[in-house]
Image (cartoon, rainbow, N blue to C red; front, side):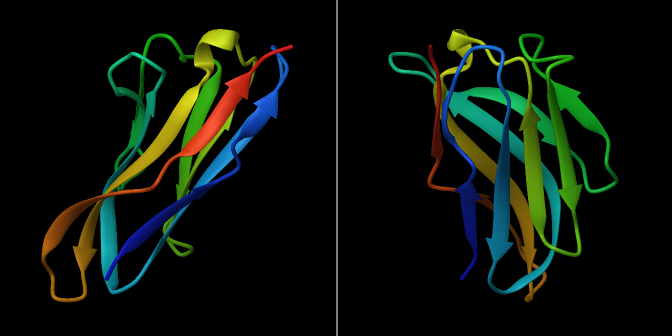
Amino acid sequence: QVQLVESGGGLVQPGGSLRLSCAASGSIFSFNDMDWYRQAPGKQRELVASITRGGSTNYADSVKGRFTISRNNAKKTVYLQMNSLKPEDTAVYYCRGVVVTSTLNEYVYWGQGTQVTVSS
């Protein structure tokens, strides 16, 4: 059984920073692409940032220059450093991972989400 567990969300003032973490556990051989998505109330879930196994990154235009995705393969953890936060960044943030299990099968897993609220 594989789990992705996010942490690091919370309430922050506009212009502040947060660092989200997503730790994978279970029968994992490796994990490939890892992504952060977010979903604001009344809106569709959107891709925020992604990182390949080799470390190539991609960002939504709305967060370019403010957010940084990174990963530590040894710790099976992906991070999202969020700087210069704006009220419109308020959402539930979800981690999504493409995981290769110990049986060498590839599956997509989602975390449970962590709330980020940007407000004064």
